[in-house]
Image (cartoon, rainbow, N blue to C red; front, side, top):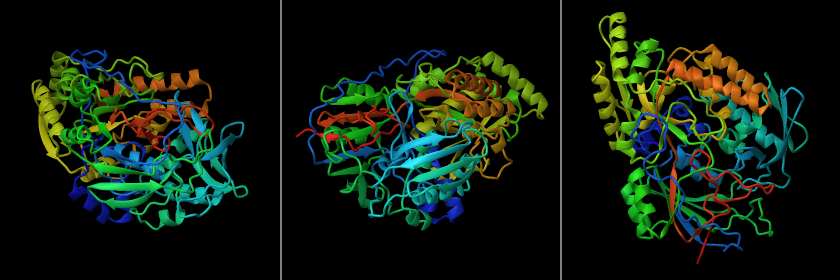
Length: 564
């Protein structure tokens, strides 16, 4: 999660020209400037944190669901609109979006791809063309039918985004075959292309609404429709009576009549609201809070997803001196005691990181990422100063919240101890995101890489997107490593799991060698709920497979129900 989007940043984002608004709002793939915490452990290795991450007392049932009722969901942050290209969807925003929109594809509990709003996918022999087969009879919330032309217009709109367009580099174009088949022609083989359709890139909306640049009145195909929105307070969605999905017994989804998403930015206030029964569910990344609720008998806690976790880290701009010097980046890594930081700030809930995947991930490969060693750090600092006129000064940016301020103070102390001068820059979240996407920053706290499959994170590492600032780019560190580019190309072209993993092993090792990130810990959003909430993260996909419990910290809500 990121720090709450403050009202000034929210209004400023709305007032920007359309092209710039796309920059402010590109949290399309879970991109967010982070001012938040989870937890870790007190040593410098990758052992689990000192607090338990096990799920507790989950209420899951195969009984006939109770239909009706309103669930109140406590969110960490507000969103600035619902256009999937031009608005900012951090984890809280993505959670609301899953009520309003469907994606064409989804992940099962093993992080394997399945059709969702789409009926199926087909490809040619070399994966340079894909066909998206749509379900008949699906309508948008305003009653318009979903056709191949609907999806093509949506995709073409997203492809034109100043920032998101980078993810569409390998898409040559779109066409239709009849009313229910979309043809996607690619410039290069892309064996797992449908995975992109699990994200905001795969959202289906009314293209007329999308192109109108109205971000406040969303029109999707989701199980719920927007009812009311009091910005900064609450958003209410009501059941979509024409939703296309039914359960195995023929009951039309969703089960709930409505959901109230209530924005409560303070974690203690969210916890108090749950205990007072003012809300039914809350999001949390506060290790102390999660540990506290684990000791209370009246709540279920989901804190251990089968999917990937996001990583919390310090992101470095490799084009900004002295960070264009590898010795400078390595010095910072050796000077950072990530274990003591995560234990102190997050209560020991999470695992220290040395790359974008936790040790439990099927993609994880051991790397030689520099571990805390202040003596080595000081030696490298001396070398950097000798090469850069006797100076080693870093500008560390972050949003204006308590967690970030504590983190910055700890980093400032650790880095200063080895001879690095640290200046602190505080930016509202919207401004911080703009500085990152345009390459006008040096170092900043960041949270990212929580997608269920590394293919969805690969755009951030592509060397062809490492353009000179201030050109917009999704390669935020501007790292230009051609070995990474070659490995990513090999991963896109293969359908062999072993070859795919081998390609991402190269990526991880190169990231460890290049040090564009100072890894801190792997963070997973936790959900704490009343025991009257049933099947909060348990659901089935349209083909009967069990869905992935959390994807980027969020879950669908169409199959959640409430006990009387």
